[in-house]
Image (cartoon, helix red, strand yellow):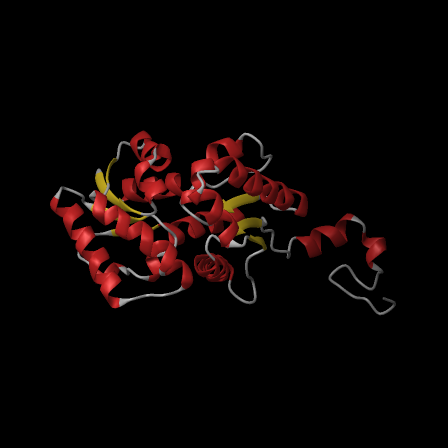
Length: 259
């Protein structure tokens, strides 16, 4: 360091004390670390990772990308619990992963699946860092568009249980869900096709038909309420406004990281 120079002259860094810290650290980029609970499924987790990095880079430019930690589950373990209605075991697994994220330095948690938000409010009580809730983020986007009634496609857990609907209702938004046979179809294809990266034209057509049915019942928009559905359905596929929960959730994480 003998030849070290800066705006304060030819002094060693340790001799500059606060001046050195002020000069150099004012140039640093401060960014919070996001913890991603993924693998539920892996195909959408990679979209989260991409959206986070693209979002950070769009804001900061250069070689700036997201600071994040990923815990990726074996989805078969989660699905086995779900099929057996063993949500206590799933909660234990998710909670342990979140606590590991905290210990590793995560400053916020993202559950990279809509269905896992069934556990979000209880998890929040046991975490020291924020958990960014996908339904709250989606509700804010719907309100921003000025819509008051929307349809939701997702797993049967997300469509039929209250955890997503209640967040929308708190925001003054009414939620519609597909008829029973359509709910069965969406739930089945999420697990057996989309979660494996299988995207079939006939499945896309059926999803679009379901969205049209919801619109005919008064839905002003459609929530793609499973993080795999945006792999299949794009905004340009339908005249009904769609809300990509994966993208909205990732954008909220970018905002948090740079706040």
